[in-house]
Amino acid sequence: LRYNVRSAPLAQRRLPRRARATCHLALPRAVSLVRLPPGHSALRARRARPRNCVCAVSRPTVGRDRPLRRTGWYFPIYVAHTAAPPTLSPHSASPLLPFTTTPPQNHRRHHLLPPPSGPSSRPRATMSRRAVIVSTARTGLTKSFRSGFNNTHGAVMQGHAIKHAIEKAGISPGDVEDVIIGCGFPEGATGMNIARNAALWAGCPVTTSGTTINRFCSSGLQAVASAAHSVMVDGVDVAIGGGVESISMVSPVASKTTVTEEKLMSEFPALWMPMIETADIVSARYGISREAQDVYSVESQRRTAAAQEAGLFKDEIVPMKATMLVTDKETGETSHKTVLADRDECNRPGTTLEALAGMNPVRSKVDPSAFITAGNASQLSDGASACVVMSEAEASRRGLQPLGAFKGFAVAGCAPDEMGIGPVFAVPRLLARHGLKVDDIDLWELNEAFAVVPLYSMQQLGIDHAKTNVNGGSIAIGHPFGMTGSRMVGHALLEGKRRGAAKSAVVTMCIGGGMGAAGLFEIF
Image (cartoon, rainbow, N blue to C red; front, side, top):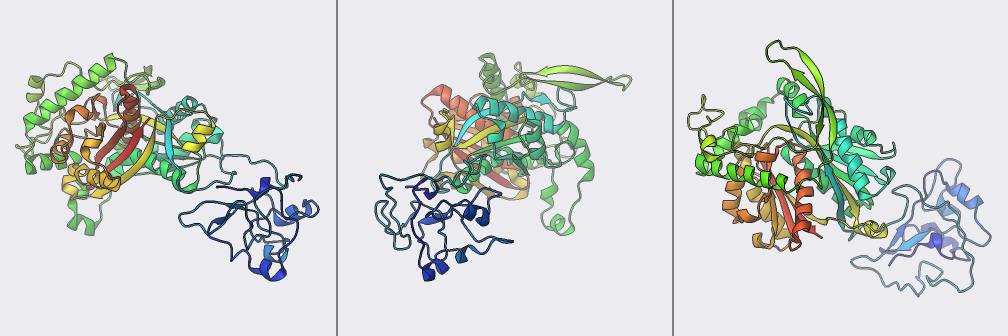
C-alpha cells in the first residue's frame, strides 16, 4: 500500500505543540518521508500553503527558513508496507497522524508543488522491486590491432551501444538515471570515467550520471548486476549496465605502465602472472588434455559459424562505421580506411581438429609441456555492449516487453595462479542462494577465456555441454575483456526467448587475480 498525502486531501488542523516538537522522531516504521524536489524550501512551501492546509515539507531547512519542527506544519508522508508493519489500516486514523487515509467525498485537491519531473523525482518504495532487462545492443567484435576498431576511442564504441540500446527500449535518453560500465583496463582510450563520457556521447543529458567499474573479465556482468541492484535497492527506475574494451588502443600502453607492489609480489606473485600461464597451470594441475581443449575449440567455432549463418546475432549487433588504421607491412607507413563493423569477424568457420593439433603452444619456449595455443584460447578483440535495466513496474507502466529479469549475482575467490577455476566456486554459491540445482538451469553462458575453463567447470559442476555456449563463445566470437559479460547476458536472454521453453540462464566466468563470478537471470 502506498498513500501519498501530496496528492490527497490534507489535514485540517495542526498537531499539539508537544507532539509536533517530536513527531519527526516518533513516526512508525511503516511511515517514510517524501522529499521536496530541488529548489523548494520550507519557506516557499509555507507561503504557498492554502488556507487550513498543512505544509508539504519533509525536513528542517537552513538559511532563512526556521527548523521544520518549529513551524507547526505536518510532514507529508506515504504509508509503505514493510516486513513487520505496525497496525495501520488505510481506513483508520494513526495515533500519530490526526487524519484518516480515507479521503472525504467533498474535497479540493491542493497542488502545492509542481508535477514531478526527471527520472528520480517520484516517491517510490525501494524494497521488493524486480529489475528487468528491456533491451540489449552491442557492436560487432573486431580483431584487435589489425581490424575495424583499432583506432576507435572507447567512448565512441560504448556510446554507440548505449544509444541503440536506448532506442531499442523505446525510451528517452533523459530517462536514464545512471550508466554503469565495466572495463578490464579503464585507462587511456577507455579511461577518464568512460561510462560518463560514453553516456554523453550517446546523447544522454548532463543530468544522466555514469560510473566505471572494474572486475577484469567479469566487468560487464558486474556492471549489469550493479545496475540491477540500483533498481532493486535504491529506487532507480532506469539504468544502463554494459561493458567496453579497446585492447588495440589500451593494451600497448597498459603493458608499459604496470607497477608491482613488493609485499604482494612476494606473497601472491601470480597476481601479475599472464592469464595464459594460469591456464597452462590449470590444464596441468587438473589433467585437462591438449586434445580435449582442441576438440572443444573446434566445436565452439562450428557453433558460432552456424549461428552466424542463421542470423542469430543480428538482434543484438548494431552496425557501426569506423576509421581503421592500416599499416603497410613493407614500408611501415600508415593510412586510414573507413569500414563497417556489422558482424563478429573473429571466428574461423573452417577450423579443423588437425589444424589445431599442429599449432605450437604459445609458451612452448619457456614450458615445453604447455597446452594453450592461439586456437584453444579466446581471441583478442575490441567492442562494446549495453543493456537497459528497468524496474518491472516502470516497464509495465510504459507498456514494454522485457527480455528477462535479473535474479542474483555471486562472486568467489580462489588462488590467483589458477584463476580459471573461479566459476566452480561462484556458481554453487549463486544456485544455493536461490534454492536451485545445476539441472534447473536451461542455458549456460560460460566464458571461454581458454578452452580449459569451460571444460573444467562443466566437469566439476556437472553442466551439460548441450546447454552451454549453444552459439559458441569467446574462442570463436572474441573476448573484449570488460565487454564480454554484458554481451553474454544479452545473448542468453535473446536465445532463451527464441527457444521458448528456456526459463533460466546463468552467465559465469573466471576473473584475473583468482576469482569467479556468476549471474542468474529469468527468461521471459
